[in-house]
Structures are given as structure tokens and as C-alpha cells.
Length: 225
Image (cartoon, rainbow, N blue to C red; front, side, top):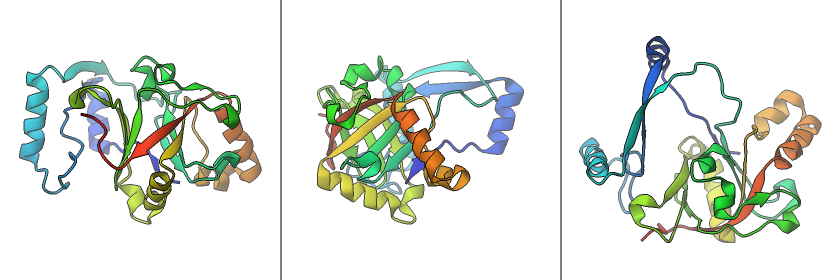
């Protein structure tokens, strides 16, 4: 069950704590993701710097100084990818922290609905999942490419033992995934080991009943124009 949690360098955290604030940049042109048709090694620092420059010139990059909080947040920041068959339904699952959608107006903006049962799961609106060998990216397919990115997951760690590869193949075969978003931590294999399968099962369903869900179409090709 691949998952993503931000890893921060201890020296960086120490500096942020001492200063009490950090510089936050937001936008679709940050030089972080490798464009379609390019390789990670071939997309050099110079190319990434040029992308950031282009974002600034076109007004696609926003920034602000933000107060640094050293205490953990109450809402989860963790993506979790689960294989088909989880929760007695057939589709691969992507659990996404709800803050990823709140900054776009909330999960309802894309047609997600509060979870009632998987039989009542709606189809997502205005959103498609772009699945690559290392990334899961959600896009608006009907807007300009530079403005279409919603949120994404980089699965570099999951590629080491093919957990992500197996999930990717399942998603592209099904051509759909079950998208779940919520504010609570979704149990994983580590949770099962820590608290036992029975407690983890009940915790997972508690998380589900406080979540939003939708079925999202998937594609290996970049969906934006």
C-alpha cells in the first residue's frame, strides 16, 4: 500500500523553527514534475529554473511568507493507494487528504459526495487521473494545461518493490479508480501491525464514513490541452 508523507531535512526544520516562518510557493510551474515526454535526468536544473521563470512571467506562481508550526496538524497530509478489492469493492483506491481539494473549493467542486455506500458512488466531474510510472496526478481536462493541475502524488518510494507498479497496472487496466478524500489518517499495513486487524478494520470504516467519494477516469496520457 504505497503512501506519501512529506520528508523534511532536519536542518531545514531546525532553520524554519528558529526563523518562525517559511517561504511557500504555489502554482503549476514549480519545476518539480517532469513534463510528458521528458526523463527525470534529462529535465535539468536549468530547465526547471526556466519553468519557474515562465510561471512568474505569466502570473502562474504565487508566494507568501507563512508562519511555521512545529506541532503536527490535526488533518492528515498522507496519500494512500490501495489495491482492488479493498472495502469489498472492485476498483483500485486513492485516498487523498481533503485539504488538496479544499483549496479548489472543496471536493463537491469535482462531484465527490459524502460516503453512504459504494453502490451510491458518483462519477467525478471535471477531473481525470493521469497515471505514469511514478506519479498520480489529478487534472481538469477542460482548461489550459498550465492551469489544469489539481493535486498529485509522487510514488518514487513505492517503485522500489513494485507496490506502486502493481497498483498502476490495476488502475490502467480498470481505466477507473475509486477516489476517497477525508481529513483523517487512513489505516495501512503498518496500522494493522500496530493495533491489529480488527481495530484497523473498524478505524478504516470510521474514516470512510467521514469522507467524500467518486469514481475517476484514468489515462496514461496527459489529459490537459
